[in-house]
Structure formats: structure tokens, C-alpha cells
Image 1 (cartoon, helix red, strand yellow):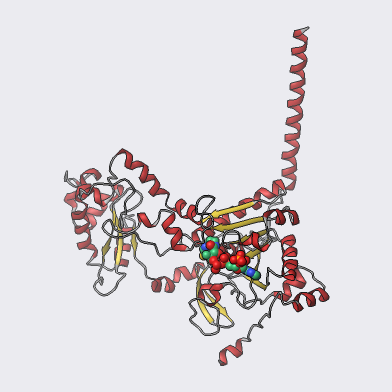
Image 2 (tube, rainbow, N blue to C red):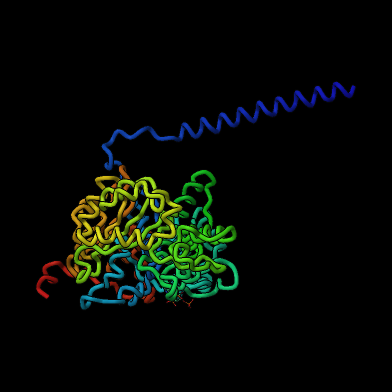
Length: 476
Ligand code: COA
């Protein structure tokens, strides 16, 4: 009897497994059936990667706008919601041309549309509700709690539009500092970058790269795209949070690596090891040492006396050491026991780089670049922003682009640094404040003319300026 029962259970299990396999197959088939046919259109001519994705862009300053600008470059329709009369605060920050949006704003808000809306007014919230209902993603980087105070809680957003992805940049994640307002350099300091940047005998330094703002915007964009991908399967949106501290720490990963290596002895590739300076408890500032464990420094090149950027980054990588010796005219170092192997060189790095610098100082940074790369020796010329702005190769790839703006004329910007072969970025100028208010109310949100009149009469949208004609600008 007992045996029979076991047999029966086994048969049931088998049947269940079969059913499961069948439904698995069905799912796979369903997925295959959903897969579109391979496009026959030429590369770059079959729309953009994020075509059809609508973004409610509630961002300001730098971190959030970096994120939504990237999404716009990949084809998303980005609707920037700004406060009437004021807009994103950066419109008026560091202004260089009178009555024209600052470069700060224009360089972070390409390819977007702008609607002005007082989100704290009744009519403003009416418009916001419709925006939430018709967009796929809401992106914001207000101070902690600001969105809730506005009435846009996650629960409300989710009940209005369960498919909506709500993405936020905040300074800190949950914890003691979660309520703090945070800017770039605060994040660089709290994320471990400043304590590990600078020279050993100097104070902590912030970097010129905006790793707190733009870096976090980049992280957030990846979170949004991943959430959109998951939504294809689950049908529902989710919250995406990227804290600036976390983003900076992620970029400082190698420094946390070194923190743990310290427990097992000194960090031998750091210059201070060769100088017999003891290590403390935390990852020290390493000057211009290379983060990859290969000794590296910045060396003078021809013209350094007058040109602040006549320098080159030089790495004594072990695999190319012999080529370096030949190039600088020190072939004996290839076999000399004090120089031939990396461990022998470590206590002599100051002398070694001194000798290499004697050679680099006889050449411009570009000559050093060409001569070294002919032997696969990696070096980094210190390029000024002027040199980068004028670089024809960067212009040709669209990494540096010239954009025309009705109020400021032509200006240079950084284009999309991420190149997709089937989704080509076209950089369009940033919108004027509220330039697309009417268009969005009527064409996107489908408010009737009466409703638009009501909304406008309430003052919720303020007054949208008209774009000046190009001729009018030329005459100014
Ligand atoms: N209509 C009505 N009110 C609006 C509005 C609109 N369209 N857009 C914004 N506001 C309101 C907000 O609701 C907020 O009101 P509240 O304080 O009553 O809640 C107010 O404007 C100010 O927003 P806030 O985000 O606090 O701006 P801030 O200038 O005081 O602070 C930051 C700026 C960047 C410090 C802060 O937003 C922040 O910490 N953001 C998160 C981290 C971040 O992204 N930092 C880097 C920026 S590059």
C-alpha cells in the first residue's frame, strides 16, 4: 500500500514537471513570438533607442539634468517641468551673455521640452497628474522630502500610473544624513574621493570632474533603463534611487580596495612606499600615482616653463619597461639588477622618473605621445580645455559639438559620449523657459482649449516667452 502511494506521488511529480516544462516552453515561445524581426533599414535609420519613452523631467542643477539629457539623446521625449518665471536655477547662474540662458543650463538640457508649472497650485497639480499618467518615468533631484511635500508621494504616483518609474537623486541614502541637501563637492568629500585625492603632505582635494553630479546622473540613467527593461516583463514601475555618496564611492572602488590591502602590509606601488614614509590607518592621498598598481607620475615636457599644461602622464608599466629604457637612452637598465624588475625599481622611482623626465623635457607632450605609442607605451598628454575644444577628432565624432541658440548664438557643448551604432545622437539646443507649455498642454496632455484657458487663467503656468527670431538676435 505504502509503495503504491510513493509510486502515485512520483507520477504526480512527473506530470507536474511536464506541465511546468510545457508552460516554460510556452513562455519561451511567447517571448520569441514577441521578438521583432531584424530591421532591414540602414544602421542609424531605424529610430532611436528610447523612442516612445516619455520622461517627466523634474530635475534641476546638474545631477538630474545630466541623466535626463542622456535619455533625451537616446530618443526619449523629455518634458522638463520648471517653476514659472524662474525655471531651473542654473538658467541664471554664471551668465556670460546678457538675457541668454547660461552655458551651465544650455549644456545640461539639450533635446528637452520645457513647460512652466507651479506644482504647488491646484491647477498645477491637475497638469502634473496628467503628466504622471501619460509619462513612463519621473526623474527628480529635489531636496529630500520635497516631492512628498508637493503631494507627489510614491503611493500617489503609483496609484495614478502603476507603470511609472520614479527615479531620484539624493545626496545620501537612508541613514543619519538622509535629510541633508548635497552639492557636488559635498558628495566628493562624503564618497571617499577627497580623502584620497591630493598629495600626501597637502589637504584633501576635490577633482575637476563632476563625479558627484554628472557621475550620479549617469548611474541614475542606467537604473532607469534597467527598470524600463524589467517593466517589459512585470508591467509595473518601481522606484530608482541613486545617492550621490554611493555614486562617488562606486567610482572610488579602487581606494576601498587599497583600504583592505593595508591590513596586509604597505601599498608598495604608492610613491610613499619608495620614500620610506609609513602608512597610516586609511588609504592615503597618492598624488598622481596610478590607481592600477603600476607606478605613474606627471612629467614636464618642452615648454613647461610657460605652458601650465605642458606635461605628460607617464607609467612605467612592467610589460613595456624594456622599450622605455631603449626610448630614453638607458638600455643598460634592462638588465641592471637595480632597475630590471619592478620590485627593484620601487625604492628608486624618484630617480627613475627623474631620468625619464630629462627625456620628456626635450619634447612636446604630443611628440612624447607619438614616440611612446609607436612602441605601445601608454602615456597621457595633459590636454587643456582649449586644446580639447579645438580637437578636430572630438568634433568629428560629435563628442564636442557646436550648437546654435536663439538667444546666445553659437556655443560649444559636450555631445553624447556614448555612441550607439543604430541610434545616432543629434544634439538639439536647450529649450527656453516654458517654450513648449502650450504644445505640451494641448498635444501631449490633450487638454481642451477651455481647460487650457482655465489652467492659464489660474496662473499655474506663468507666462511663456516666445523664442526670438534669429534675425532679431543678429541685430542686437
Ligand atoms: N513649482 C513649485 N515649487 C517648486 C517647483 C515648481 N515647479 N519646482 C521646485 N519647487 C520647490 C520645491 O518643491 C521645494 O519646495 P519645498 O522646500 O517647500 O519643499 C523648493 O522649490 C526648493 O527645492 P529644493 O530641491 O529644496 O532646492 P534648493 O535650491 O533649496 O536645493 C539642492 C538644491 C540641489 C541642494 C537640493 O535640491 C538637493 O539636495 N537635491 C538632491 C541632491 C542633488 O541632486 N544635488 C546635486 C544637485 S546638482
